Image (cartoon, one colour):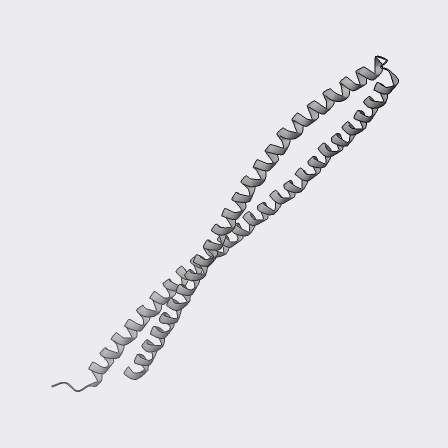
Length: 177
């Protein structure tokens, strides 16, 4: 192999090294973008989780108070009915009982609303899972970038070796003084 072939090999190795460096930078940029995406998803998910948890806690407290008060009112009305109240009062108490039944239905509906909030929590969990996927992909890209850099260093080393051999070959083929 003559010096020119060795120079060509050195140049090819240098080009491979440059291409691998470019690939490594590209992978690092993708990894950075994925990491940013993961961070945004996590922030959104945690903000949503805090908001939903606060709303659920508020609804739980309100429902507990409503339930206790409604139950106490229903018990008081039933006691008044059982004690033998006059017919006009009985009629009125039965109407109030119907209204209390509606209030109980509202409390149950609030429970159903909390169920939909729990579904929102599941969606927030999905954001967190997506963020974990982004972080895993970013990690894989960073590992591949490191591999590309190591291969580029090997290519550069090969290029230097080829250049040294070409120089030695040229020196050996040139007549001495």
